[in-house]
Image 1 (tube, rainbow, N blue to C red):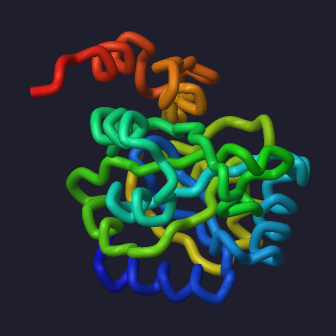
Image 2 (cartoon, rainbow, N blue to C red; image 1 turned 60 degrees about the vertical axis):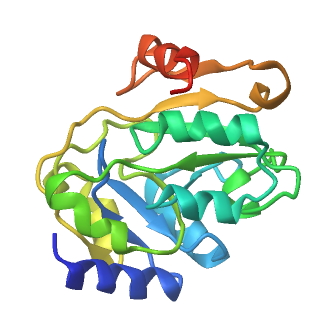
Length: 207
């Protein structure tokens, strides 16, 4: 992956295009978070019900904090412990930001900040959030390689970025909506990050 490819991805997303790109887990498909047409195309390609929420991916944790200034200090500390990494975090969203990604639950938003090692490092140059989902048909297998992405999705997007072979296991979904007040959290879907790893990160004393 090159900086030029990432710049092309940025331009594609800026105009509401739909793109396939690698993450730290599986291949994703994304669009600009405020583009209703981009979202409509993305969901149609996936065969995904329109009332299902998506996630907002940031390529830098500080960008996520800037976009969600209402997050409390305890929740921010949890994010610093957990991210970047192969997690999708469900966070409180009192200002109903990124409404297209939230679907029928505007009071919470799913956030991803992937780890970008090695050849994926240039993606850190993407300075704007992406509304994204896994690049598979709804209910279908995740794509470890670009060639594993369903041909119907590949034909319908505006851009593909090949990041080689990925982990192949989807992100773990972690609910932190009750963490600020009561320290409550739960694993909604276990994936690339194990529950024990989450528990260790959140219980570790501050150093």
